[in-house]
Image (cartoon, rainbow, N blue to C red; front, side, top):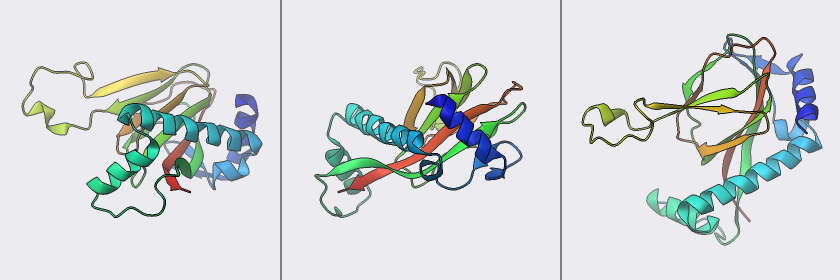
Amino acid sequence: MNDSLAERVTVMAGSGVKDFGYKKETAGELTEWAGPDAKRLSRWVCRVAGAFVESLTGAPLAEALSRSQRREGEQAKGDIHAVSVGVTRSWASLYRAGDHHEPHFHPNTALSAVYYVAAPGLCEIDLLDPRPAVDYYDPGITLAGESHRVRLACPPGELLVFPGWLKHAVPPFQDEAPRISIAWNLNYSLG
């Protein structure tokens, strides 16, 4: 499905994109305009994200949501027995030579997901250690090597899922052929 998704995104790039100067991003809800492959991919991403949460928490999604609500001081809303992961927003990003994306996170998002559709080689993404005060006192424990940044190199067809609060960045892209990725903001859905 990567070829058909890349084609749809490339066509959309002709007129339906926001040009930020450091990358181009499709406008509108990708899951809606990109056709059945995008809908099928989005459903798969939601299932994987749900399994990711259950694996990390060791509990069903309903319990993970309940824990989250208790930590936030919220009352349970609705039937928390029927919980899934749903798409809040989805879009495609197009990178050309020299494009990049500075460190950022996705506010009001439980999980972020990135799927690499097309690239002439590997797609790099940096995940930044969220503990900025670690330089103040170093107990000798390192999670990201000697840096506060972990760089992953992902081939087209790979999916990354991570908490929406995790800062991430795309280092300068150096190829002439475009790099296309799809991103999702994901949240818990009831019912």
